[in-house]
Length: 141
Length: 389
Image 1: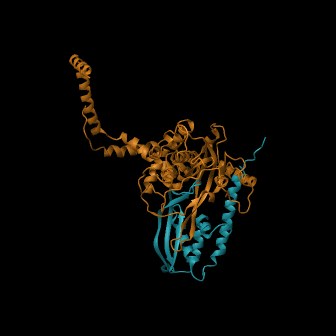
Image 2: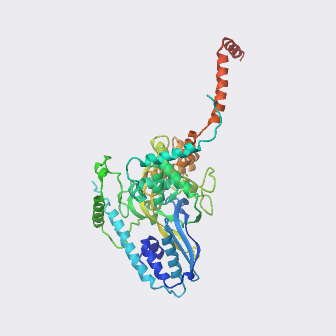
Image 3: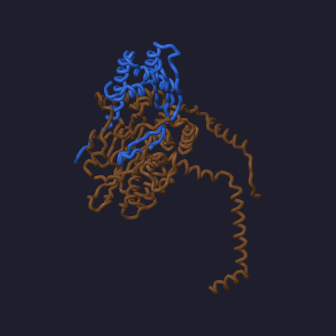
């Protein structure tokens, strides 16, 4: 997965690709295997920042997120993503449940997640490379 | 002319609202789409989010559109919307060290680990209008993509380089040249000004939260007053960074940290040149203040950091010379919230017929009294009373 965790990859990858992965996991189950515990719903998460001077933790404002809690074949799954995107949040919850199942029956998802991770890495490296073009070369007199 | 209490006006209010809509749309221009506002009016969106204390770029774009560009009104709309949603949890505490920077500068040290990156900034341009922007078509989008590719090629894409850098303030702390800010009173959770009323002196966490959602103009004005002479601030920018901050929450089943996405944010530390000496046995050091805001909001975070430094110095008693209003924590925090201030000032537009009638009666009595004392007899009596004293 490189420098990214699975949750980082899945929350920051294009939602339609994450939804495709969730569809792949869901293909093994009947509709009755899924129970929504709560959501998908728009809720708030309070952002806790650590200040750079005294390391004081403070509330810096709220973040709008979409949250889904469900059970897939009896396994709890939690999905939360920044913004208003019920499909993405539900896909994250499905994948969370699938990847937590005992015996790892959805191990086939992991190479595809790793592939998403490589794409995310490349995107983040490109984003930084564009910024790095503005690095200042000082001349000292 | 009669001065009486009134009710009614509901129809007029509804029609006034209608008229706003008509005037917004009747100019013949195409209605704005929210992604246009989010992408092309980034600073308006950032300001609505940090002053509204809600990170939601598309909703902020809607607020900017609905408010017709009025930043305080847009922030008000977002803050009102915020109250309609439940807060389910707090994020895990995150430090600016985790930020994937697009911009990172220091005015204190030329050579900082990782170097200085100007990033997306117009600070260094001459303020001339660009007439070419008035007639853009889709070809500029294609050209922008090509120019971006060229920038990526110049910057050089390298595996694992995503813009994480050590903080300059950490280096200064290592060198023991900055003051240790007194610890917050022991609290289980940081103070939350949306749940508890502010009392003074307030915990540091309350101060930082209040300023993070304060009006940019108010913070800037107070910070400027302290820098200009009505105070003791002599700031130097230690570091300013803007970029993407990954946000994590605790998984509700296992408690392990999980990432829920990234937000755009700006952060600054500002050192005060006044060597802060709390204890004469201690060697002199710099005082440093901190600023944070959603989006790219540089004036806001620098103003916040200057005020944080001034307020800390005022609390530990290390200000020299005139302290000014910017050193009064209660004054700063209670007068810098744009929503509260604008609400209070704007409410004077609403009918005050009853209170004003009372004012008129008082005025009438005062005028009668004045007229009586202006008479010949009145003046004689006043003179006699004066001589008796």
